[in-house]
Length: 113
Length: 108
Image (cartoon, rainbow over all chains, first blue to last red; front, top):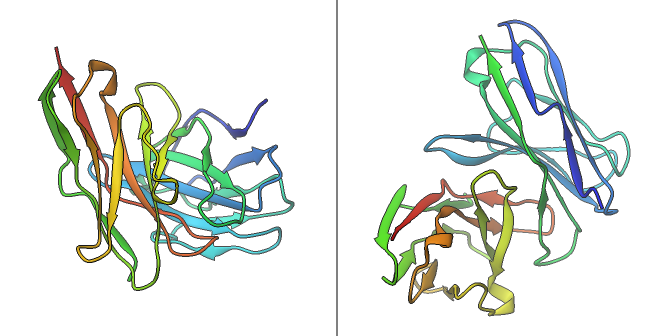
């Protein structure tokens, strides 16, 4: 009964380092999302994927890349981390039908120093 | 452009008082609208969706297409309602965008 699982939960990076945030869902959902949550800014969509092999840019895609290698997994990569990318990152998934509920992971707290 | 606006960052009320969290959206088509809630140390979760016209935990939300609003209301706030509330818009079956959120504080 895992739902949406994100790893890691916490990470500290130095400016310029790279890392990949992992997300996996076990609900056979078609759509997956990556958001960042910042105080006063709410949840901003970084990238989303409607199905395996497809990805689309959201509101704030600069500085990020994503991969949807299979239906279960959707990863977010920071190639060269910047302090402005310090945030809490959330992965979500939902079925690709009208008015369906999105399920969220527990979040990854990333600090770039 | 598709956008969700929540004008209040913080809403503070006393227990038993009515609550209204405002949400306005910009979208030219027929929107799918939702309210999500994040309680302290918990995952973001769905509270209600406009298509269901349901009442969850005493909360209701009515879609007003003329005013492009989807305000969340509860007649009598409870302390356990204290949380972060997000309004969300889905312009199609793939995309899901959120507003900036409103933190509701309910004092005893």
